[in-house]
Length: 415
Image 1 (cartoon, one colour):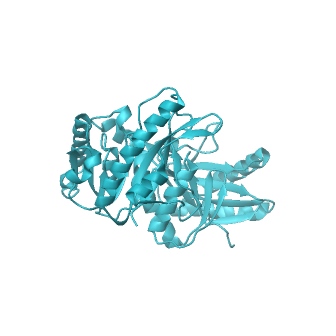
Image 2 (cartoon, helix red, strand yellow; image 1 turned 120 degrees about the horizontal axis):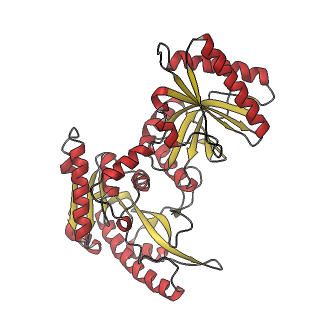
Image 3 (tube, rainbow, N blue to C red; image 1 turned 90 degrees about the vertical axis):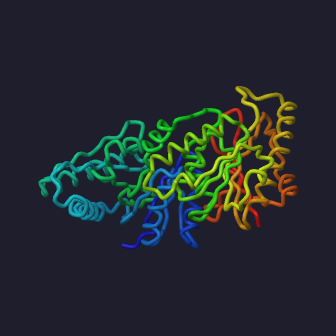
């Protein structure tokens, strides 16, 4: 049976950032067009088989996408016999394909998404009955994993805690406009890896670090070629640099704070020692103690991209008075202009600068932020306005909306 969509992506809590990152990944795979549809917290896609395989591998580098899977058939919601026949055929194939001769218990999870609770109960009961019947027929033990009452599906934590990547399968049934789409999950992000990486870092500063997931997303969006050089002029504790190394890049960090430089070196030494099999990892990074307004004094080579979260101004628990905010932003604008001008000098043609800027939002829709147009005029950089796919407008807001300072991601280009 023909199907409009053959894949799905579950987006992260920041949908725009997830879409922007996915757009960059698809663009890097040389995909020219993508047929898609927004649905709840998912994107439904139509991708070729080769593109699907490449996408699964690339998703290991993502920091904002939650899940990817296939949609193998669709039927009308009222076509109960056809739905049952397809479910029987597919679940039978799971037993044969995924667990042909294993004697251990197979774990299955059901993700049924529909706004009709009665329909959800009926689909759940019918699917469970089919699973139990096939299990008995094959004399194969099956455990259907429960989900929490407040959730429709297993969280990434539960998915990996239950070891579903090697011990089971998640089955998805999406009811969309009187059609039921069905298929297995193929990839889910593993938050335990990030937790382990974060806990094992020798040095962590709350005020001087970008999150691991956001760092990974920023590096992906920079689209730096493998073995290219990435620069972080406000490297802090080195989180962005480590994510660059993990994606096969050479990295250069700069910071004027001696404590940050020592911390970055300690964290990158620790990372390098953990991966002795990687060729000369310690030779793939450099950290410089220097003022970022004088980058060219410390960095003497061209770079393929810049990724950074710069100094965002003083830490506030509450919004400052507008006059104070305007004073802070004028100073930050001067700082950012000088740093970006230095970055442009070091940047190869066509390369990008991923740069986060602050914004103070006041009542009556009044905001205070750096004048990006003025920065571009003074530096000769241009700002990316829209992603190739999914119509995401830049800048993209990142972080929690209730934070005192909003953070917005700008992508500058050296054309």
